[in-house]
Image (cartoon, rainbow, N blue to C red; front, top):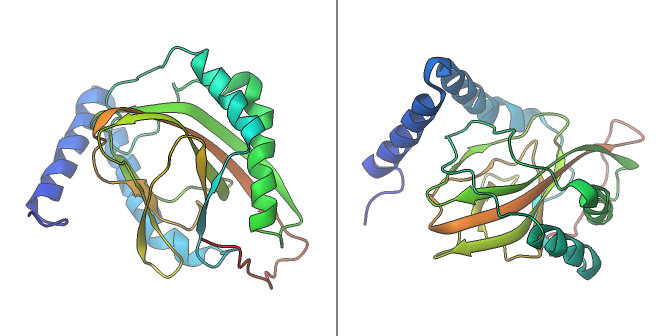
Length: 230
């Protein structure tokens, strides 16, 4: 068995970073800039952020009504596969969820209100997806930037030969591997919880919707921590 942090991991990282450089050619400097910024934020941002829950993430399910809307939307689309995702670079070319965006926003909002009840309201930040990751894809571990603070990942569909977990670090620094089935979602404090998928996707594709909000509080002091956790 090879070490998780041994030569095999270093080689994998090098291969994917080279893939970024090859994909962006004369704009390869963006790969270096993005990677330097990612590592800097991973080190510096989490300790400076306010945390609103004990653990930092929670697994739950999409309501039957909204899940049916998502399924209908997905089945009506061509299952778009963008190829191997370049390491660490954000790709803006994925289509958005269009006509069901408001329903998806409201679905996630209802869960966030229960999970972070001390927030007086939530401001919409963005919805990304449906994003389709393909065989060999890796998502570099990172934290999100403001205003992507209180977030959700909804698994829409997948065809994998083994689970492709989200690796998330809770507020105590412990790593967890979180798996999803279609119709399930993970709520997470994306501004302070390190998260990614550091092992390559084994299978055909994995499709997600990402939903982001920013909580609003009546005062700057957060006195109550939600105990509605995993």
